Image (cartoon, rainbow, N blue to C red; front, side, top):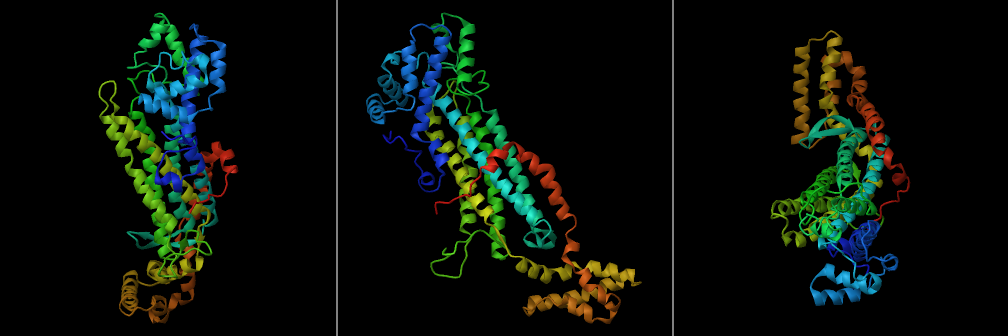
Length: 483
């Protein structure tokens, strides 16, 4: 055990990238301070329900030392007893001597370890939700700003029909809204293990209250309430079901997939020089190729998101091998996997917010690419216009087919620009629509309802989803990266 009160879950993620809030949530102070609060709540509830031997002085001493943790004493006790919970029971008893004999009364280790985990996990999800809504809010502003900026759509990463920059962003937002729903649901579904005893039968508490079942039930409810939960799990073995960890981790893994997809799209668009993530004035993209502007933030998001997506495998395995009332082989694994998932999601969100806040759009590059592809897409418009002028649809189709293949050969075989429009303009057959070509090539006529879809989506779906988090969004600060 570290004797540093601010020591945090040790991971390369924590030491370099984790936000102060999330790192603190997995610190020694948070974990062992929560243990002490749980012991205090238990003692308060036991006294309130008439259990003798718990003095006011004992409770006062416990309350006064909730955060006054002597880590050197705790480390010495753990070295001696080889049991982390009992080490802290004795350390707390030294700080609150009047309470030394009643700390942990009737409880098992999982009373503090499991209940503290549930508190820490809930607080971690609150941090993540707060960051996620800020990312969604920033992206919604981006989508609204570029609601009607035409851009080339891609399917199979091959040129397709036009969309808009803002409409494309709504595809990202929609998935993030589903992640918000899933995270909030998982957070709200977290219950409290409560006061259940060594194998979940509450036998020790039944003995303490001389066989009074109603008082044991009241004790469970009261400690749950004092600990900030509305409900506790009605039954459990020694631990709360590790299925809960699966439910908690699933939204984080799902968010990892969303973040990876968004960051990949940005990397592809950066290659096309249409959109870029922030790039500082003195930032270096390559040690050898000085001109490079590598999308390193988006690459980091992809890298960490892959890690986040696979961590759920640990908790699935753990949940599947819990023998009977419990087995201890869950402990070491979940002490790594669950904090690691929260820290990873935190870093991904911070990085994603930084990227979204500083996204740079290059309309001229986008326009140039549209101009290079639009002539092929506009051919159907040419055919319709010619038919309206009295032309034959099939003959017009053949004329366009021949000219299109000639233009394609120039692009693919000679490396030239798409000259289809010049060919159409110079072809006598298309003389009736020659003056209409520019109008027929207006990109804004190829984007369908994309701008209106953006407006409707933001109004009907984004704003209502973000409304409960208005105060969080209003207090948002720009995301800062350590590197």
